[in-house]
Length: 121
Length: 112
Image (cartoon, rainbow over all chains, first blue to last red; front, side, top):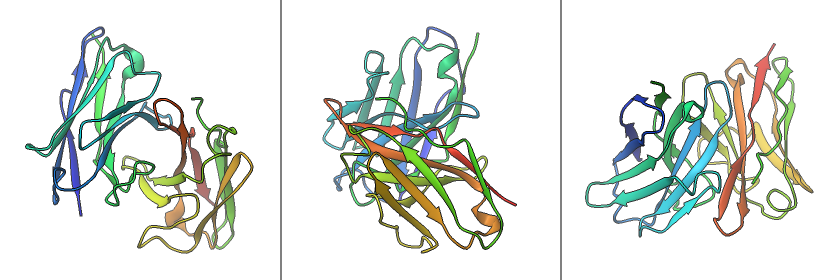
């Protein structure tokens, strides 16, 4: 059973970069063919897929974010990272990292608890 | 890559059945049998209830089932229980150059 935990600043200023890390325990992201997804949920709204990364480093981004997002994976540290540039108030959301134990790209059966990031000066 | 369309809310009484729809397009739901459904209680992370259209993960009650017709996927919950009250989100693979995933806006299920 994988446990995922997001971490990072809870407050980011407009125009700055949002940076989050997802740490994994209970398994190894280097020894299994996992995809790692980042999903966000603005307050009171639905889920929104930001992008995913394969353990090899291949990335897939939602077109709405592709010009300002970078997702990376560090298998030596059992971590994935999300960087979102030039943030605005619209980027205020709970950010989740997630994966599928089966190795599937298409769904997520293990989620972190989520971390609220507020964009405000 | 527009969001999938779900009703904002549905409701039902204990023991009844309800169905939540998730309407996409021929580019996502209509083409791929890769719809997943998630249950989310307030303040909690989403929980996978259905994947690859109709499959239930281990431990998920068979009261939860799913189907698809054309561009619309549906989640049915039978024998409603109080604990089923939650938000439900659908998600579909949408393909394309970025191998996109697209979510619906979520549906609030109220058990009366």
